[in-house]
Image (cartoon, rainbow, N blue to C red; front, side, top):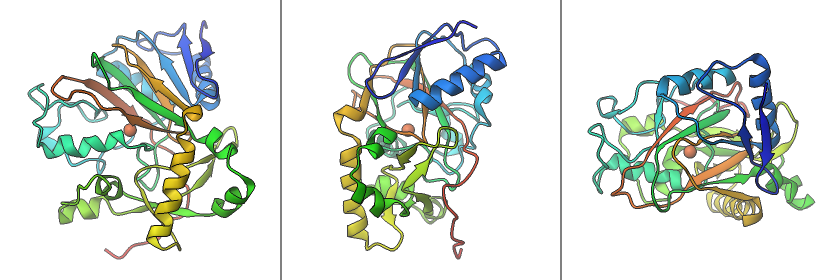
Length: 296
Ligand SMILES: [Fe+2]
């Protein structure tokens, strides 16, 4: 085994060398990547020229691939990629950039808000793995914020105040904050809010982190404006430059992040240009808090 990891940001993020993700991994190599994820929360693997099938095989080393249903508004007949692959491009089935007024494109702009993938699911995601197939000549960075460091830096009063708070997350909250409010009855049912703890503890390291996301739009027991002000305040704190790493993509970069420990956001780019990024998502194994049964 030849893996080495070099930390490339003062508080998190490692760059990995000595691993070809296109070939089968030994149990020791899988363990080394997991240990790197637990420590650095984001790992960058440069120069990994992979196919969708190779990406899915590599991803399954870390758990089951999440069922993507209920995570977007793209109709099955408009999907460009096979089941198991999340399309983070700006492309339609014809391989061309989506039209400016495409609802699919406008919905996907929500990825430019700080979030944690699948925080709108009762069992939220573990890792996301994003492979850069076609990158933009300018713009389009992905930024990551370390929610462990952000939690550690809170004052004791705030930590005590938020310790047991439970938030409500929905894709309707993140998209609603961009003025996208025209959801169908079917979408409203699909995007019904779920509950997540605001402070979570990592299952391996035991470190606490802030579980924030633009999908969070309410806090149980708090009036809505009070909840939203608190969430905004915490998000502002957690995304200060000292907690943020900006990744400038090169073609064939593969980046893995732990959604339990970081938030991320895409940055703007010229959407008339093609951008092709493909994500696999590793399912989490437990909810962060009990859900309430809702009346259908
Ligand atoms: Fe995302």
